[in-house]
Length: 124
Picture 1 (cartoon, rainbow, N blue to C red):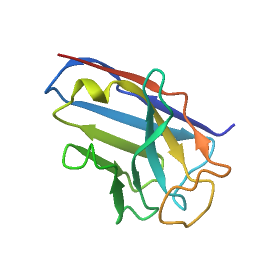
Picture 2: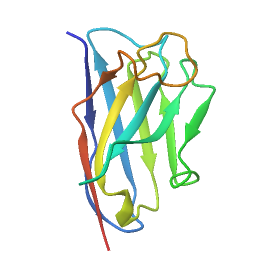
Picture 3: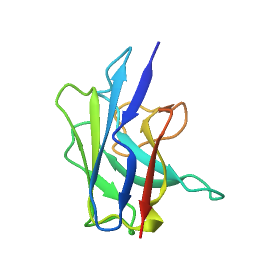
């Protein structure tokens, strides 16, 4: 069974940092872009960041650029999101995703594999 399992969420204060991790099991994703989305209460799920299969290309949504950093390890099994200077508006459930299309530089959501999500809560 292919799974993505996120960890590292929690409750922090504005200005703090968190590091989210996503570990794949059941297969590796070395040929797939991977990324993070988030969903705040009452809002649609939104793109946060992704990283190419080789790890050489990254993309961030504007609101997190310069504060968040996505990375992946050489095994293709783990992708991380380092979050700094967290703000209340970063509060959401964060989801890891593996692209459904092999070798695409950016995450493609068709047939994508999703994790179950991890809650991040940032208070003032």
